Image (cartoon, rainbow, N blue to C red; front, side):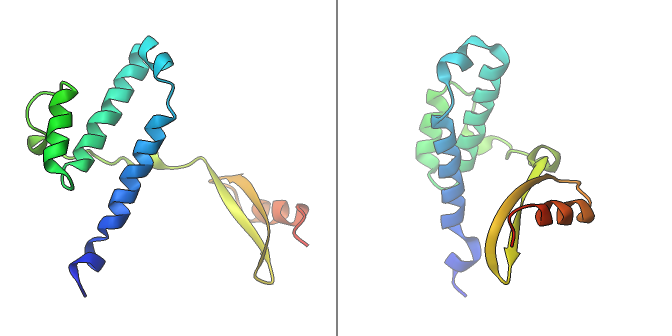
Length: 126
């Protein structure tokens, strides 16, 4: 087993790129008008730089200082993950018949199995 297969560096970079692409969709003009949204945006940038720092430490350090954050990026604590914030309220259930995709339905995460089956049978799953 090589080090590449253990660390999955390409997956980490890909996830960071998804975060970067998400930031491009944010309406910066509207964010600048709202103090709470601006603080959330700055926290997003700060955490993005922290996540980038192991891969491109010199660039992350330059961006860190350019953004006006104090200290060194390498000396900052790692972002803390909160499972409750990451949990989706609605999940997508795939409906298959004989192994073939027939439909997809969105259901609340805490739905009972019987209600999901009834919803699936009510769709065009035949």
